[in-house]
Image (cartoon, rainbow, N blue to C red; front, side, top):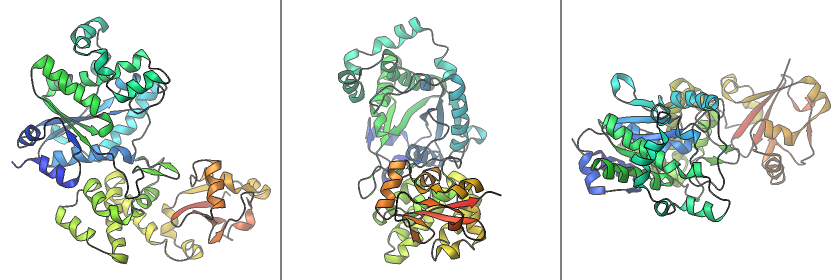
Length: 417
């Protein structure tokens, strides 16, 4: 069995490991690995995709991934990279969030026949007896060690650090130890922001069990222009179609910068390397075809083949006038829409509010900036004033209007009957 480590390196997943040589050797045989996902929201975002794709590739190479839903750790809240404490969620909120996350993980991993597992760390963390936990686990951590974590150190010097947050690294480390004992799990993967927490788990297994386990983190993914991947003017790009439609998800990938196409094909699709090389070699107008492949494959993984096909039809209808697009029924079926009441149209709807309601702008301030910079349109007509009000006269005879932000982000405004 060839080592899957070399595949991960080739596709750009490896930023840092606890032991390159030993991990490469370990991945020559089937192993069990895991990645954890705290249920802080009812959906994951594209920012979570890199470790998910890493697990998917490792499963295809013959390894067994465990997706850990953090029903227990979410009750504490990961302070990593946070300037203040996360709000504590109720058990009901956490359970609702976990239901959505579990469904999304099932798009990327094959859970049939035990080929992958999904577990909830609440099953073991909530059963812990506090004094026993301190004696068995807490004694292996020092306060000095925890304060080496940049987040803990910075928070202690600025807004303060609560005792509950200080325990997060211990709980995540215990997760790794529990999975090692229960399933023989020897590798934890994650983003580079999790390096401290994952490495603490590796060290805990060494101290308690005298065994070697591994940490592997992927790099922070920045676009060619230096922007954190997954962030847009409208905010985060979610894996849930209720938060980011399949059409908008597809558009996000189509708008990939030219220099990022090959890299994103390796990270966010399962296409073979020879096909990726062919696609990234395309130039000029032909590069659009490579972006279409990237968008279709990424959307297919997250939303399924049918939704990806519909989104592709919608994306291809972007060429031409707004009037022509309004005649493309197949396109209109996949474009996100917002109904507006006749009485609102009679009074006139503040266009700034409409841009926010349609999620073309994350806030009123952002909507005003969009208009001032000349990037907001009613159909093909640029909106010139932030004080403009949309009325029934702006809609076509069929009661529909295309609201646009920039060149490629559309939202359909429909007069409610």
